[in-house]
Image (cartoon, rainbow, N blue to C red):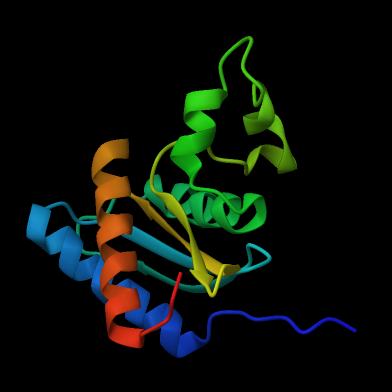
Length: 144
């Protein structure tokens, strides 16, 4: 039998709160998705002004970061012809996202979930996700 560690709804709400604050700091309203370690949605928020097209993108970024156990921007760098991850974005029914803004959430080295951010540029999405994670770890005391 396996012991599974995953984010709680309270953890997901805290991640969203921190992402909203980071989004407000750069004045870019975002769509924010938090998934469990299997990539399934725990919580979601679309800020006022968040793009409707970004709803599913944020969810797919969280799905990818959780299931692949890596940030989505890593796959973007390796998903070109001749690179090891070329074509991976066509897997999982097209849900595998290679655009920056999806980040795994870890606790003691174990992936317990992920956050996906979308509505800005890939760099802005990644910046907001990284800021949310940093604040989350500071607030909870979890060790990545």
